[in-house]
Image (cartoon, rainbow, N blue to C red; front, side, top):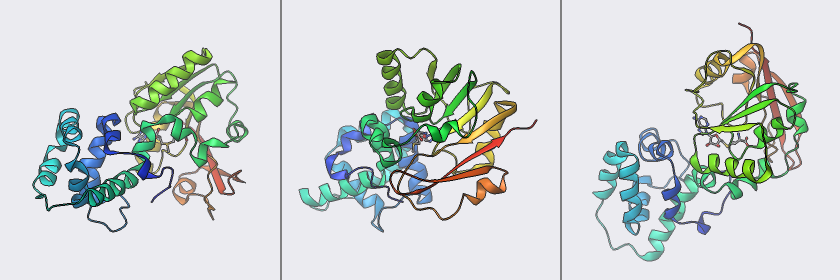
Length: 275
Ligand SMILES: C[S@@+](CC[C@H](N)C(=O)[O-])C[C@H]1O[C@@H](n2cnc3c(N)ncnc32)[C@H](O)[C@@H]1O
């Protein structure tokens, strides 16, 4: 699905030089293996071959940063150059970048902050889901810190867990610039969170849960204290959803609905953890 957060024509394959290993692995192994992308019915491997042709340094970077991508890059490299014009290669490059716009956006946090779901979001939607006053809170997949920094205004301490280096650095810069004393930024993926059992009063996330609900929710519940809260607080995008996520409802989440400033219908969720 394309969110149209960016116009890919504004970017080049050099953006890939900012991608973390986990993102490269997704793009150059899992994505091609499982066909997890919307490339408008185009030939992904041919597009990638055309796109990388003018960026040998990007191929070298991917090989060095994520050696597990080598097999896919070998396949791409074996596609013979067929006299592609500059315009054809640029078109393929744009298609690849648009297909992976989420990773492009993660590499440019200021652009991410202007995405529809973040730019007009009101923190009141987080505060109505759980009382975070003086609590120890984790934000999983924190991004630019939409939830983490809102929580920090009332919580005792907030941990912002984020697997993307550009976004971690963005949050650390903001903490330094604004002298925010109670937010700590760390690495961490939702299926493998680097915390002991029963650590947090509330575990927050937004636009992170959904690839494997059962395992993701189990991992977040593991590190939440008995009686604590799992909170899924999405941003205020323009999508007109017609119903709450049945996967979350089936797993016992309460849902809250509102119309966003962008005209979308937004569902947020919470569930109290019982151990
Ligand atoms: C659409 S953004 C949402 C950012 C933020 N939670 C918000 O709602 O404003 C998704 C975020 O999840 C992170 N992410 C992607 N895969 C992840 C995973 N497996 N575990 C944790 N975070 C992940 C991305 O780096 C990105 O920051």
